[in-house]
Structure formats: structure tokens, C-alpha cells
Image 1: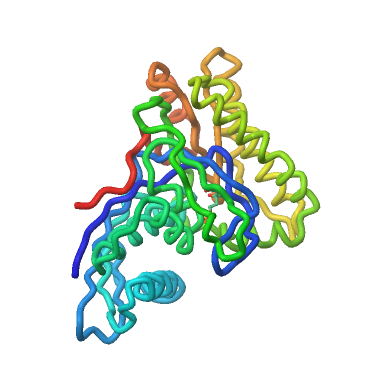
Image 2: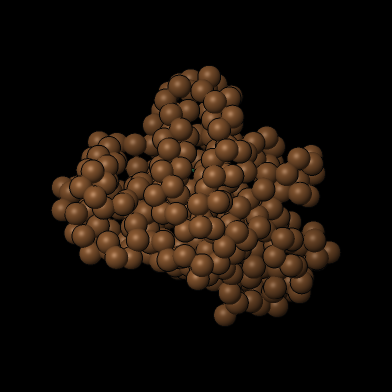
Length: 325
Ligand code: PMV
């Protein structure tokens, strides 16, 4: 009972930042992202009779501890859905994403695990059902079921049945590019899980964050449909800054940025002042993602690479949704 699936990571243009239910992973706000072609995870799940426990290899290394626990917990959901609670699995994942460096390896990781795991055990789920299940592994992963732009609708039900992602526009609709500026591949210090919890619980700025979401979402969806790059970029950049502002007001306060993060942000704003339409966004880590259009690729890449302390610049096009290999 074996299946292999590939899933791409995604970059949130309107961030998911806060949970209303920690165990079901239900968010306090809806979010919207672009799936990226350049970063993906390929996962094989093999359910076998006779295994005494799950095994998880990531990039050919056995994984234990918290990361292992999250995978087995997620496999429990799949086993329960299929009524096969006696079956354990060998799971093998290959990550084409620097793990936990703020490039959202959990999004591609849980989307690939959900797709391969459900297929291997013989469940036939539609995209919404798969997105809803994937959400319970990692929230942002719910959006990686689809290619192009997708929206995770927060829903309102306590059981989470109406909290899943839906497609907004395909990868072919609009060729918006993303440059991932890699500053550090070190594992992040405050996980997104812990960071959003502390912010929800303690930041006086949190209500302000929530207040702006519906307008940001409404406006960015309109801008994506009309392919208005400046509008899309402005909303995404401002939304990112609002999310990060909530962390500065948390107790104890924290930030995902370092000095290089700020330098890249400034360089992006300088490029813009010089007439190149580029915008940044940042997740729960120091790395910066820069949004640009294909005609500016050469100059954007060159300028970013010239910033002292930049380890790498990885360029990506819009990516596709889940595929089975
Ligand atoms: O799904 P998680 O736990 O990896 O959280 C993702 C949080 C952000 O990346 C900061 C925002 C987002 O919407 O992806």
C-alpha cells in the first residue's frame, strides 16, 4: 500500500497568523498564497502489515522527537479516516526546501504527506477534503493542495469542517515571480506555532491585525484577477509588515528579522524608488521573498546577490498543485 506525491511550498501574500483552535489548527483569519515552483517535497508513504511503528526518513536521515511525533499524529488521522488503525507506515521525504529556515518546508511537507498517505491507504478525497485534512498537519499546508493563488478560508464551525483552502487563480493565470533571498539556513528560533500563540495571547496589536484582514483579502483578490502588480505587491508588503509588527508588541517581545533582513527590505524599497516594481514579504524567519515580474528578473537577481551577507537567491515561478508520481 504505497504511494508517492509531490507538493510545492507556498508564500503567503496575506498571512495566516493566529489559531482559534490549537489542536484542530483552526485560524483566526483567512489567508492567501502563491504556490512556488522552486520549492517542493516528494514523499512516499508505504503502509505495511507487520510494522510495529511508523518510520520517518527526511532526506535519508531517520527523524525522531517532535518532527517524528507530528508525522505519526498526522498518520493517525489518515488511519482513523480509513478505519485502518492497526497499520503503520514507512515514510520517506525528500525536501527541495531548506528545512525550517522560514521557507515553509512544513507546507510542502504536510501537503505531500497528506496526498501520499491518503492515496496509499486507499482513501479517495476531493481537493477540499484533502485541504481540510492537510490543515491539521500544518495550517499553511492547506493552501499547497492547489497551484497558483489559493485562499484558506478560516470557516466558523467549531469542528473545522468549513476551514479549508480553495483555488483563486491558476499558475497560468499570472506569471508573478518570487526571489527567495536566503540569509541563513539555521533553524528558526521561535517556531511559527509558538510565535503566533504568544502574539495572540499577549500582543495588544493583535486586534488591529485581525481588523485589516477582510479588506486586504478583498482588495488583493481583485488585484490578482486584474493582474495589477503594484496593487498586489503593496497589499502583500503592508500585510507582512502588520503581521511582524504584532510580534514586536508581544510579551516577551520578539522578531523574526535580523540586520540582513532589514538591509534586503531597504534594497527592495530602493529598487522601487528607482522605478522597478518589486515588493517583499517575510514569514516566520529572517529570509526575505521578493515579488517581481519576469521582465525585471535579471536586474532584481543581480541587485539582491550584490547585498553583502546574502548567501543565495533562489528564483521561482508560480507552481502547480499536488501531483502523484
Ligand atoms: O503553517 P505554519 O505553522 O508553518 O505557519 C505559517 C505562518 C506563516 O508562514 C508566517 C504565514 C503563512 O500564512 O504561511
